[in-house]
Length: 179
Image 1 (cartoon, rainbow, N blue to C red):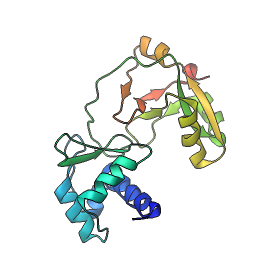
Image 2 (tube, one colour):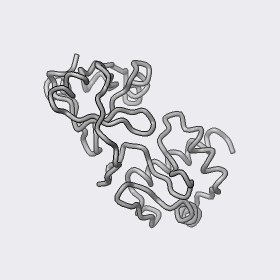
Image 3 (cartoon, rainbow, N blue to C red):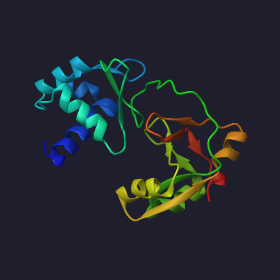
Image 4 (cartoon, rainbow, N blue to C red):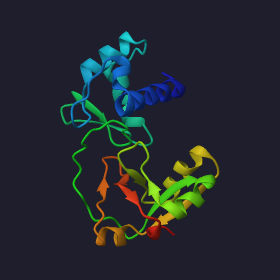
């Protein structure tokens, strides 16, 4: 399987597990988990032939660690980024003092006025380091990295969560906490 094929499968899994499970007739539970056997069967019926070995490879090699298995490896879910109404079950945590948000340059003016909003996702995604934020911001144009005063936000009552793949999540970032 080529890297291109693996990337295509990863993108398809993101689409199905984060946004449109019904596109292949899949049902997720309240926490976003899907039965692996059913997922493989539904993907096969919709033209994406994948077996457990390849699914393991896609999950293990995804650079953003977008997916995770349960301990028995019989259930799978996306780690974050859902537009579906699900409860990921993450516990609130105190974040580091500074987190980073990567965005395209054309978004900066609005963000500095209105803050960072989650849009159609469950949370705003924040990075622990500038390099990750740069990669995220570069997906939609020339990247700009914003510093978020995360610990100050937390101390002021905002909740933060850490996803299984190391992405920090919060409901939104008011403009006053952005540098």
